[in-house]
Image 1: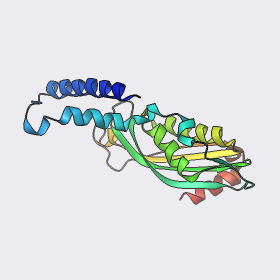
Image 2: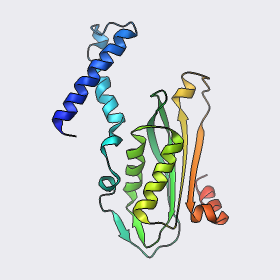
Image 3: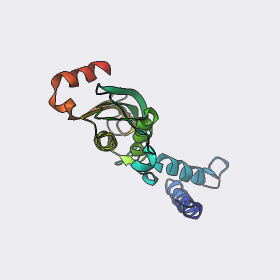
Image 4: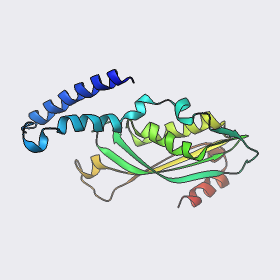
Length: 191
């Protein structure tokens, strides 16, 4: 996004946040709220910046030839996202494993892939699938496994208001779906 497009978007979002705050019954001119519409607009742009990224851009060529064919596991990648139903945060961690097929992915790229998809309006189930598909696409792996554990503010702050609830989602592809022992090894390693 160009600087001009970014400023136009920020200005439009600022106007919307000003309207929302006013409709809630607040005075946007009071001291504590004067700059809030602008800050909220910039925060929302940051929290959803994944829309402006592509998988190719995030991976940036960091796929390397390797003879390794044993499981590679990256665990406890923290994630922050916004649920697409209420635009409230969900916060958790992601575990990713894959079975290399002649290529390995640079370590930091796993966190970047997670962030790219998490920084969009999401549901956890779709986020888990998107991450698995992305890792599979860039590595050509023989198998990919992704587990996400997260706490959802939409369930904790509103609705049923259950403070200790969490959600776990998983996607198993290739060797992790077909081979029970491989799947069990992965699940035991992330506990």
